[in-house]
Amino acid sequence: MIHREILGREPPVGRRFGFVLLHGKKYSKSKGMGLSVQELLDLTPPPLIKYRLFKPDLDENKEFDPTGNNLIRLYDEYNHAADLYEKGRTHRAEDKMALAYSLSTDRRRWRVDFADLLVTYQIYQDWETVTERLGDAEGIDYLRKYVENWVDQQFLPEEYVFKLGGERVEALAKELSEFKDRLNDSMTDQQVHDLVYSLAQEQGLKPPDLFKALYRSLISKEYGPRLGRLVNALGVAKVKQMLTQLYA
Image 1 (tube, rainbow, N blue to C red):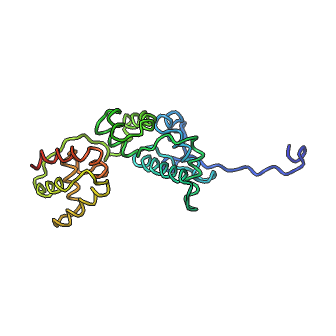
Image 2 (spheres, rainbow, N blue to C red; image 1 turned 45 degrees about the vertical axis):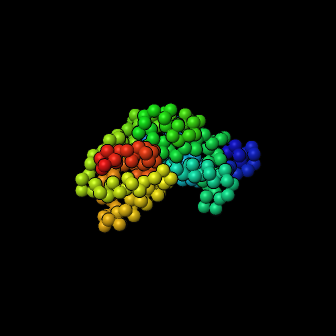
Image 3 (spheres, one colour; image 1 turned 120 degrees about the vertical axis):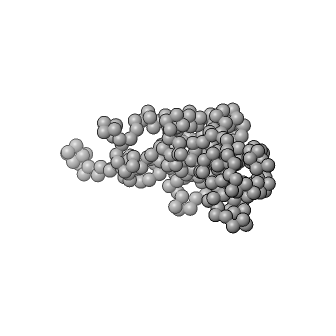
């Protein structure tokens, strides 16, 4: 009415905004669905929340689940988007990622890989040691409270819940000793992974069986974080020491 009678024009069409969803349902604290704003801020850095909300079109619903591997994947995507923005070169499909990143923050606050941060913290439980191993002191100091809250509220994926200390796997003792001997400091995460596959192929084993034996030897579980990430977080020297004690 105001637009027609006073301004003499048709009113603008109202914009429809999407909802924030958890497991396909709208966040609603009155119905016990989702988290409060404060709970979200205790678990997730504001730039990450803003990136997730800005990336889709405004009228799309946004699934936001700050638990388990969902959040780890979001951290990975955010770091990738930050890289794209800083390089200034994107393909058309990546434009939204770079734009969403630019809207989410005034500057990049961390560069450390979140999964590396989780694994290293689980191993050492000491932020000074974590920083020494990963670098990015400013970024780790910024993220540490979110990691601690995430761990305290048991949002870690099961594969990231572990303690050091393994057991001898007698059936594969020879192969595990061979893995130890071939491991070296120059290997990347992927090269460690590839070593398991190539060794399994040489010995006529199924790769999953060798992976399980290595996890049991290091953390007494049959699965854990990506093996290359775990080995490099521990340090090759430490892994060799642990395997030598079991398979000398």
